[in-house]
Length: 341
Image 1 (cartoon, rainbow, N blue to C red):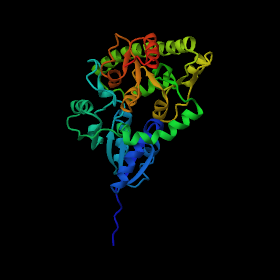
Image 2: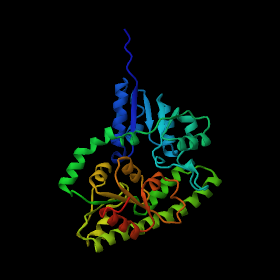
Image 3: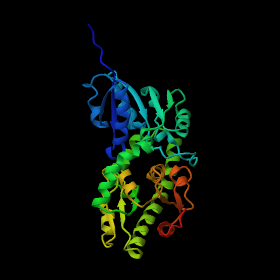
């Protein structure tokens, strides 16, 4: 008698601190549907494509690096499904020069058999770039984990943070590309690997780079000014800085060590229990602001008034929006005084 095994799904993860919990949730639902599931680092699973049983590879991105790996796994009979998590916080059209072909490389037309769109805006973008690609609007497990019935999972971690670090603090989540742990050369090499061979795209990309540099520079200045304000004016208010996992934490440690009430915390696990254990979150256009609001947690965004990149992000629409570090600092004081709505 011939015995056929159930389908196997390989769930690829790039950064565990950002993806692992949501990918495990997806794995749970797949197992309940009768699939066998393997969760692992994307590079390890892709490199071992030739010795893995034929199955479905679920990619977490669609740029040129991912599509090259899609091609490689397809050569060994695997099926390719993909989603894109970098645009999870986008809600409306960005400036005209923002071309999404850096995120969605047209090679996916040939190598990806199904794309799972997180929202209608992303679905529209993909259909404009690759009208023949099979696209389904499904949502994303990262946002599913913000549902009230699932957020409670972070309760024990939240309590541990409150007991070991502080029972009440102001959390500053940073996301500064200018403070990357990767060297400029590594970043440049990565960028070259995803650039489409298109002069028009390269011209738009240069304009986007200039706008992003301006935005990132403003965010950097705002973040360090905010740390200074809390350190100098409010020594009794506990402040925790949680850098983005790609950032160099020592930058903040060196700057904040002169302030006894400011501490740089661990950034290698999910940000969500750290958000929930805080009194209020401050960010500079980071998607964690949207996550905080979805968990009914107060949050403040600092964004320059003249920034072209403010309006296209959900996080700036749902957070209490300020334009300077001074405004954000005062908003926190108003929050503690019960004046901030």
